[in-house]
Image 1: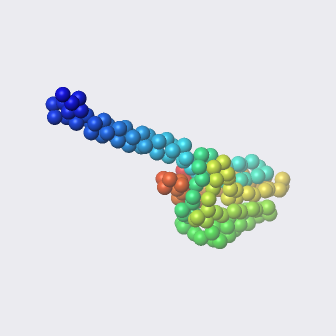
Image 2: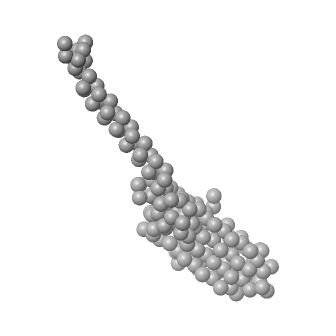
Length: 161
């Protein structure tokens, strides 16, 4: 009697289908691990001292973040990049602050590598202005960023959260 056929079951086909199922499961596990290990994350980092205000975005994740959109808001109203910078300057001028302002505004299609950061706003205050600095409210200004990984997973960063 042939061992290949027993009770009408072709054991070679059972073994082949089992091997395919295990291979597919293994492939899915590998893709899940790849996604977990290659995930960008965008976070906001704020440094706030009397002499310096700095707000930056950083990618502490393990893969690059491809910025799909960057939206700027002043008092919850959407504005373009030029109006965002002008609003910051006007806001500070209202307090009579003469400062050193540096801005960098990333746009869509910017890539933020793993471990990199971008200073969005950096303001150096003079010693005579430290007391005015304490009266300012940076929460009036907001940035929302949509990003994705190389594997297509998406995320959103909101500086107000």
